[in-house]
Image 1: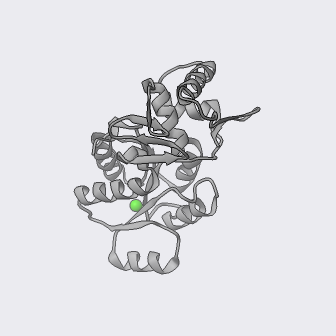
Image 2: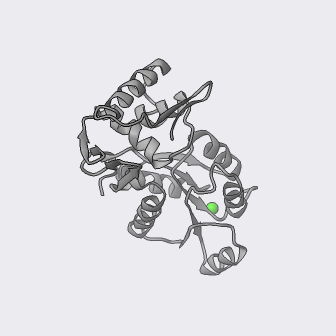
Image 3: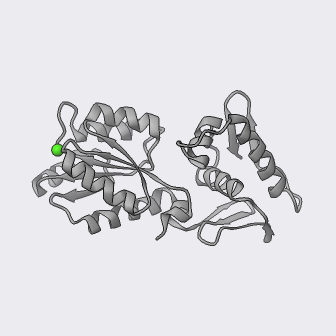
Length: 232
Ligand code: CA
């Protein structure tokens, strides 16, 4: 899977041992992921809110706030409840315990783990949580978006979308009904490292609307005053 072909998904790596954190981050970046790093539970919870990662790889043994507690808090918050969490644990007995504790973790990997296996599990969780990043087809009403071929149709008719409009539509179609602020759209569609004026978002939303309605049909995008935009 070439994750770069779609939107670059963000993985949050929570690991207190620097060497392990770096090896894991290095491998994830080599796979085309954007990586955010946290070395303890407090930092992890802060980054979860700030970076809105698509998936979290979380060590069980962390100083102060444990991985289990971090997981519990992630799964308690409505905005992060559906973000997949893969727990890393040093011993298989811990894995049994974490299963028993019902922390809501989506998967468990025992240390020392094989990097190849962990990558496969990250991709599997991502396919479930972010289908467009995993090269799948998304549908909303009569709109169909194929993230692998980059083709979009409405009512069976092909639509012409620029690359930015395509990424915007992918973002909306992943979470219909979710209201995205201009800043969130900038982060996700343009990337964090690029400076773009928030008005640019409005320009591209305008182009996307036009492209979606070129063969008729209602405008599916909603402007939410003071908040941003949503699909439906
Ligand atoms: Ca640890």
